[in-house]
Amino acid sequence: MAIRDSFLRIVRRAIAVEIIGIILLGGIFAGNELRQGEAAFPASGQAATAEQDYIKWVDFTVSYEALCRAYAWDVDTHGTTHEVDWVELLAYTAAKTGGEFDSKALSVLEKAAEALSEGECSIEELAGDLKYYSYYYEAYDAVLGGMVGEYEEEMEDENGEMKYQSRYGLKAYFPLARGFDYSHYDDFGVGRSYGYKRKHLGHDMMGLTGTPIMAVESGYVEALGWNQYGGWRIGIRSFDGRRYYYYAHLRQNYPYAENLEEGSIVTAGDVIGYMGHTGYSTTENVNNIEVTHLHWGLQLIFDESQKEGNNEIWIDLYALTRFLAKHTQPAQKVEGTKEWVRTNDIIDPSVEEALQAGS
Image (cartoon, rainbow, N blue to C red; front, side):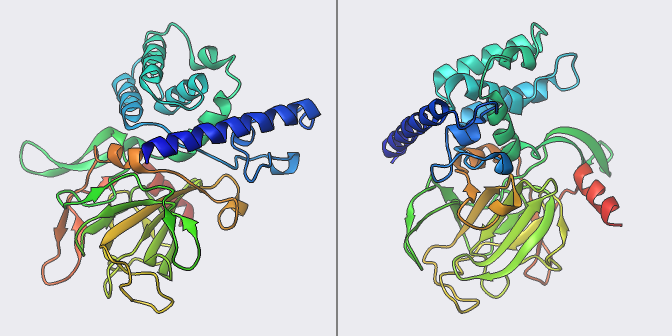
């Protein structure tokens, strides 16, 4: 599978390069700066026009190792004279390597991070001659932009009292509650046949019915209810509007956390629902999925026209899921109910801003 996926990526990039050459020779984009978002990976073979200048394809190939290293540099240099932004670092690496994140790319990443942290240069100086840095930055910031930052976490102090302490780092959470068994593998792009032939555009995590599902990032509940493909499902939009999180195949009869409804604001790490195997039916509340699992997906939205239709952008979440396992949230059962709740609250500044804007 890995060999096949690598081959397909190589072929796709080769075809894209030919398309770029034809476009440039024809002078279609004379006088305009060409983004790699449209140049290297044009949607349906078409690059953006002046009226539709937004990214139409993202091949998120950042490895688990690259995510870990870039994140470590970001956290370790936070508050110093020369901070290293992990998204900028990953974008620079991708612009240097054409989106590849092999061992050589990790060396590129490390050298750049060292130079930036020592103040030997700025990211603008490093990336100044790289034609596609701006594309990679915009694409990667759309994926990772809300996941790292400052927040406050409820913690027990030396006297046993619960108090909020300031934190900087991952404020996005792993999609399953801590301590619940699961298994997963990279199944992005695998064929599906129910209803019509299509590719699997999410990440499946197999586990036990009733496993608490956690909000990966804070945001608004945009969709809630039955979908014949996803069964009971939840759609949560990030506050900046660029990420749509999709959680599907939730538990029969009791799929959602209490009081969750469309329009609700959720905080990263909140219990939002429970793992099940509903779906593949036009009739509501039916278990037609053979294996109990969570399907979670992440759609990138650079323009609202991409939300539904042929220009949807879904990314491979295998590496990101492994990375998010660094930040899990425990959950505890509410006695006498089927409900679970998080054990440690956080104060996310983005939630506070959203609440103030809505008041």
